Length: 260
Ligand SMILES: Nc1ncnc2c1ncn2[C@@H]1O[C@H](COP(=O)(O)OP(=O)(O)O)[C@@H](O)[C@H]1O
Ligand SMILES: [Mg+2]
Image (cartoon, rainbow, N blue to C red; front, side, top):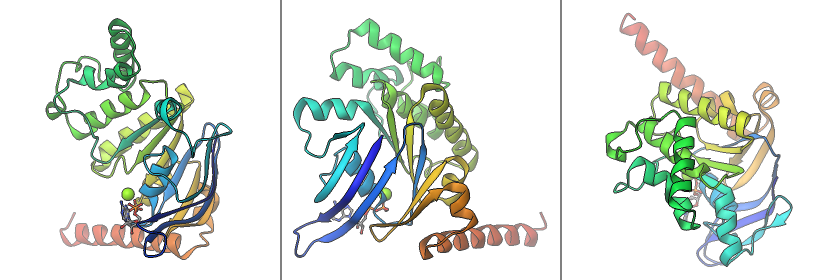
């Protein structure tokens, strides 16, 4: 469904620039919940932004459903962006628009009639569990509710692929679990292929069927979630596992010292 071949991205000039992606090749199948896992600065956001051409790769190709989209422009680019929804850590909602009008926005862009786009938005708000909150503004919602609005908006144009860049990083654990459950439901019931970009091991481990680990702009290992965690090969993944253990260890120790 998404094939990335020999993708490189250099910010700045080719000579003095910064190589954020170095010869990345990976394949994401239809129906996957695919994780891209790596520490801060590894190149995750650059990779995901190259997938929907928010960023132009320096070299290499991105194909979606067999079509090379790397050189898409104009109407083709607009169509591509419609078929690939995206959500972010900071939700990126329009603060001056109601919940309903945030979700109808992508449909306004493609000229869908008002009654039809509102009908579609109400359906989507029902799917993400926000029925009744159509008239609120983003500032009147919790973080988890705001991310649900962003998910509904990302699906408005019947996206087949959803890219989630650190989508749960601003949320507490309980809300993170509920958003991941919603993404799983959208994957299962609507057949949307989901790409989860995260630095959080537990997020990738709990929801993804396949994972690629990125470090210093390169994919250092990839495979099924089960295989990867059973036999981590790369230093980057071993470090992430070790850090995660240490954090858990420190939290448990703090609880013990508090007498919990
Ligand atoms: N617009 C940009 N201009 C120059 N360097 C950038 C830009 N965006 C990201 N970088 C650099 O590219 C590297 C990868 O960044 P990014 O893709 O944001 O990583 P991640 O999302 O994994 O934290 C970092 O070293 C970052 O500083
Ligand atoms: Mg990032």
